[in-house]
Image (cartoon, rainbow, N blue to C red; front, top):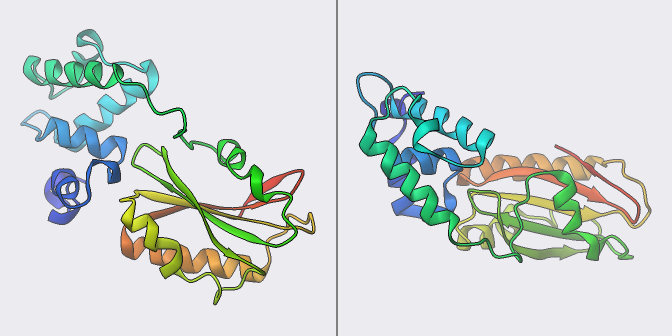
Length: 213
């Protein structure tokens, strides 16, 4: 999708102004930095190509960016300078990047041994960095107990880009119930309306975990 085809409020710079930089994905942040494309390539394609280099090399250099169609010397210098400035500031070790179910499960150790069902929500920024973990409800999971309003209220306050929800099964059974799936579908629908994606709904037990989505 070209930038001109996007709704104005979903364009990176407008979204950044409305919701803050934390709400943007890596791809959207790159589009915001690059700004616009040219006759050679649309900004969406340029951002995709730059993101591929960033994921592959874990860095941006003049040499690596020189092969990206649509990037001139001035924009390459801007991207390299932005990356270098960001790299000089270390991430808070208390805010890990949740980029896999394994990493998410490590954040849920405290509810694995609970004798009641705990439903928790992890709010994440645009880089999948953990913003906060909160207990939403305690008790048997039902779609009436876990209301989207309660789940997304703090995510909106956090300016989260996405969330991961999870609950424990004291029985040790990892099988998702009909109620588990109903809650997941309801939260997915609410997330789409709010622009805060539900990345996963996890079930955890003392010994293991599984993803419903």
